[in-house]
Length: 228
Length: 213
Image (cartoon, rainbow over all chains, first blue to last red; front, side, top):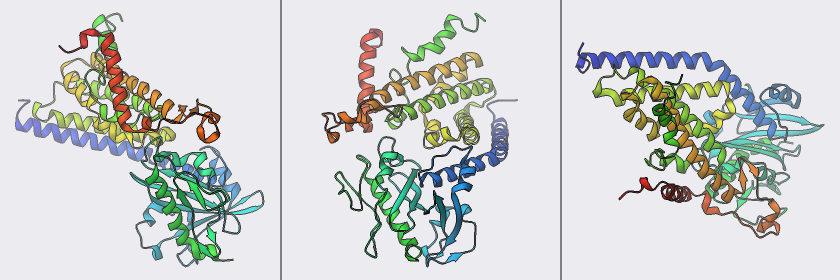
């Protein structure tokens, strides 16, 4: 058969595409369960790290069950609604209008103290950023944070994942009186005792993304936070 | 065995590490050298992943080389490389989840890396699988080596750490009462380009035959 002819070229490309497509589907389907398990373990690890519990993929399920006492979903009015909080996908909810969103709440018990863990999601410089923020029992001060990102620059915006950046948020008040103020990310020289933290140098847009992500989500949760 | 590592085959493997380096001699793959070298860790991961992909894609296309119609060969190459990268990505997600998270952004960059397509076009389509494998590994390592050298200087001078471990003590920094300040310029992509230039300068002054007339 003429290897440069149209028929051969056509058949060759059809066979190639079918073989590659079949191969990719087999790989994807057979690895799916393991990948989902990895993702769930990661989610548990992330939630736990917002309350300063470090875990590995292997013990995450065990520690998660130990610390997380309750999980439920609230709506934008702060009312509890039906559903499984752990399975709520924040990035999918992000595209819905705020009053239709399901807002998961994880209630943790850390050595007898109640902590509320809320997921947050927003935009950095190159792509999505997200995380978890945990509040003390009074729902006014931050206990811990966890941030992650899809594609921020290593050494710059990606530094939001470091303990050094996260540690700044601890014990910050998100309310000024009854006014929700969130956390202000400032360039160099945050005032101690205020609601300010230092931005990442060279990662200003990502840092600002963190600021508005926290402010936005706390606003969505505000009715829930004000419940006593 | 000796035939497998004849002088010629050794040259395929080791040449790209110095005199035939894809980055500093052929000036290929510069784009990712800028993107992933702010830290040592992503540079190493990227170097290894590119090595795996150049090695496998070279072998597969070398095996297919006599069947591929010339007119659609670039498409065939792209399909093979893309499929390979996706499979590697899926495997990492299932079995090495941590690594896959670091690689997330770079997976796309691997497909677009000019070295991969360059080696397939220039070498694998004209040579047998074994030399193609050596050529793929050699070029991947040659690329990774430059990435690691650049990342070493950028991370050390730009962040004061190496592979995430602190090298320059916190107490030396101005904000902690010392006299040292990280060179923020090192974190910028432009500095990677300048470092590539410096490496080329040193390399050429050692290898005078590479200097153009």
